[in-house]
Length: 91
Image (cartoon, rainbow, N blue to C red; front, side, top):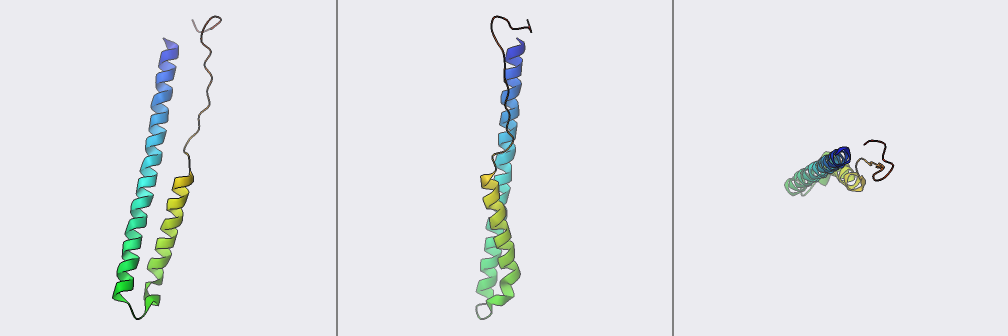
């Protein structure tokens, strides 16, 4: 019974860690899309002088870097060993 509980807890912890990672990636993607849209809007409004959009360009580039890094991270790592069977001292 203890082994089943430990396995269940491990599955729940891994599912939670995976969910957090997905949320971080989704937020980074949304931020990237928002900053890209703002930069493109600024460029359309300032066709003759794109230098007025430099701050939007920098924000977009920063969000792009965050998005790339969020895609690289793998989240928490867990390594565990369970001894089951004859000789199991937890009986």
